[in-house]
Length: 455
Ligand SMILES: [Co+2]
Image 1: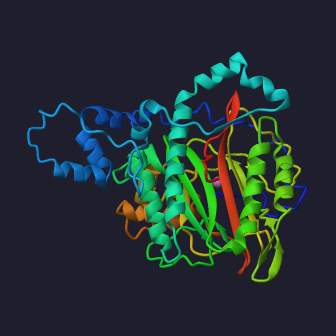
Image 2: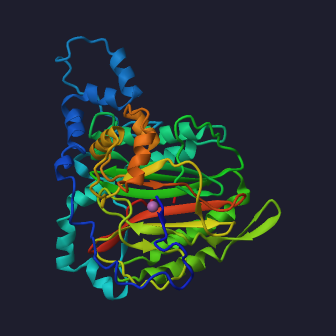
Image 3: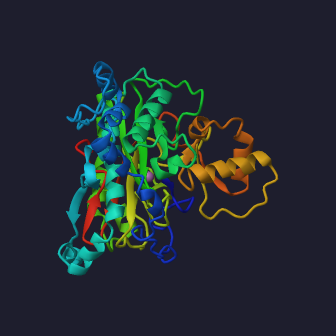
């Protein structure tokens, strides 16, 4: 999920003086969800061992069918346990904790630090720091594996002719199944599930669009669609996005942005200055052009959308990663979690708020306001219990059974308690693309937690 540039009119080479963003809110320390950690995998492991039939049935249709065919009544008799599923289904339905028992989730791509930080790979103290963070790492890896499995299924099955609503629901239902939390009972979405609303952004819409109830938009062969998916486990949010196009005419646009994002991921590291990193991203992006319907366009980085740090239960931390060169001398630090995201455009390279809002989030610095409107009061309670400061969308309120909440929601936005995130849009007729990874600046290595075979 994209962060707007910290300064509205972001002219090249002068964002802001560094210094104010130096309080390192390292993501490693502040585990918000210790109590919830017990929920993440253990139950399913138990199921897999002792109540295998239930586990498979719960895991998907395959299991359910098996159960039906076996007519044997005396359950006690069969000592031989039925095998729990060890491969993922299509659509995804098997718990990630069942595919990877004992919290042994696959690592992301580990990259050694360079130069003065090379010592970290083997340093005893740094290795110790790394080891005491095992809950943080396993939550992050579980969220990342969920992200990979769901998005790779999505990449295979999303086709023109589908509605954005069915695409979003397909992705979100899959995420919730794989982490084992349907998010329907009070407080459940906070344990694990969607880290933010699924962005399905077409053409000139760069970010923050997700269909609201009743949206009938159908994906077209000519669309360029950014798919931005957030998965969280105990508040550890993996934020990663890719772009889909069905016409090869857009290939260079996609290649430019993939290269720019990978440049940012590659050059990121402890002590790297954010403004300089922006310069490297810009250089990669601007080395491409793309011919669309007979016109050749230079690919511009969208300069007022940024990458960002991620904190527990909070998608936008205090630091931002520009995709153009700036004077921001703020450094990346040990323990930071960054979403490295870049957007390329055939348009102006600037986005504006436009269209109906779908994304919202409770502000972590929300003021104490005496709410007059009772609907706002009760909605705020629902938001706190189910999302805390995780971004949510109107569909997430709908599925919790909330009705006629718009007045209350707008009241919370006006009171400064909830922030709205309108769609971010370049000029009409422009095409935009996005790629994004989440990286952990561990004490010993950089881990590109969301890296997959696909991107
Ligand atoms: Co993001």
